[in-house]
Length: 295
Ligand code: RIB
Picture 1 (tube, rainbow, N blue to C red):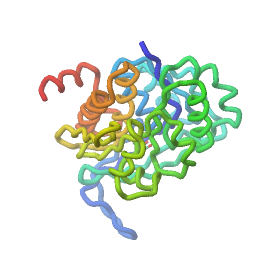
Picture 2 (tube, rainbow, N blue to C red; picture 1 turned 180 degrees about the vertical axis):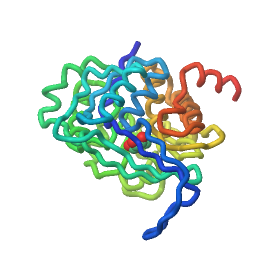
Picture 3 (cartoon, protein in one colour; picture 1 turned 120 degrees about the horizontal axis):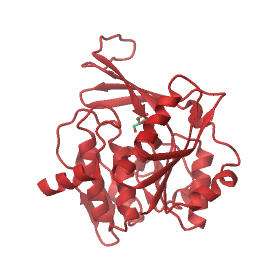
Picture 4 (cartoon, rainbow, N blue to C red; picture 1 turned 120 degrees about the vertical axis):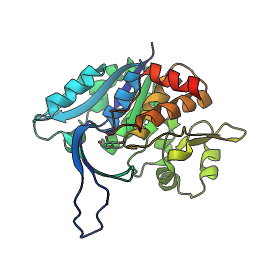
């Protein structure tokens, strides 16, 4: 079995469900608070592990009331946490999510996710080299993402870089990622053009733009390919992108062709939005296979 490594964030998500989203300066009465597990890194790791991949994670948590729960959750979901460290000087990362009308807005407090060491590659090079596929995102420091993309490129390890949330990165470093998976806003900001077709055309089989309910698009070298999303009842879109990335890594690490891998990731992402919370709806392999049969 291919080994997937996720280097990324681990959060606790405070999700406020409300019929109305408050405007600036306004107070509204909401409906419910759900405290649950999240973090783009942890979400992607769990998404991949539920799909029966062998998954490890490098990340940081605090030493606080939530850290043990968060670690236990990763463990229970079959993610190897032997390289997740507890940081005394910082709290576990948290996300403060307003959920209204099936869509979310999020403020992330990185906390321990910011406490990666300067000698990261030196410390974890052997761990990274033991994996076939590495996923990184932007809820950990920029210098770590850059070092990881660089190191994996030199050592021929396939990477998915999910540039979320958006932040600047030098183009030559960005392009060291084997696959780049921005949403449309991130793609426009990263590649400095509003024309999504132009963007994918420049980076064949490398930039895969996720389009929410419209699916995903990429350029296969000859034509622009749109992979349709699967229609479903939306409860909470939080974590859909993470499920997409985790599932994509699973399919690609099995050497599936890109179109098939994106289709698989789309199906997994569509199942993930049927439940409240980033991880609650992430499907098992049999659920994805079942859904495929019905399509
Ligand atoms: O992508 C969704 C995730 O973003 C949430 O789980 C939250 O923790 C934020 O990091």
